[in-house]
Image 1 (cartoon, one colour):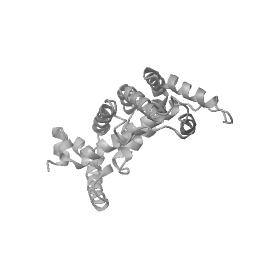
Image 2 (tube, rainbow, N blue to C red):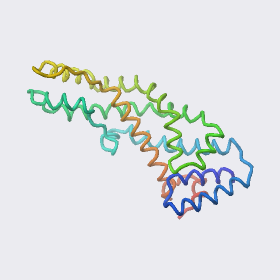
Image 3 (cartoon, helix red, strand yellow):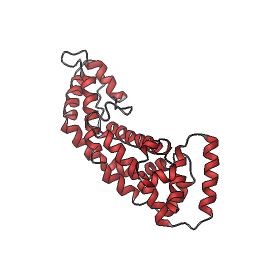
Image 4 (cartoon, rainbow, N blue to C red):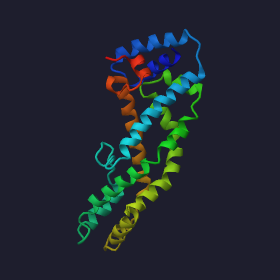
Length: 237
């Protein structure tokens, strides 16, 4: 029963409408306040819900063309675009932007395969106080919690993975060739925009964004309630 109340509250974050959200939220708050809270039930339930979103997001984005064919497709950063606009006029560099976009998205897809244990380590730290705030928080409180508590650590741990992935698809060596060609042009300001930070942040933006989408799906689409607990809490219609 406690877990059921927990997941009901958690489902409100991305609910179907403001008036319905307020009505159900008030009822759920009353139910929670009328019963003793079990730390393990509440925090454990939220961790399970986040695990489901993480697994779905990582699985989708780490697939072949997972980023490239998604709304989270990684495009070239602004500084790199300035370089590309110049060098694409040089013979042999006409398809720089197309090739670079493919390489950056491939790198993010490779890196995403290694994201799950980093995410799971982050949510292991959730305590009862965190969970209680999330239960009665805003519609995106769970995603905001995950991002605020894990993004910096994810960025730091992801960076060598991103760099290795970029090297695996020859993106950094190719980009160095492009930048060298640009810097050899007359009357241009020498530039050396790095790809690592850009790809890292965009890869994380995509993961957090899709986790939120998956969470919403569980709450609003019966077909995505794939366990007896989810069907019990959210109904089967």
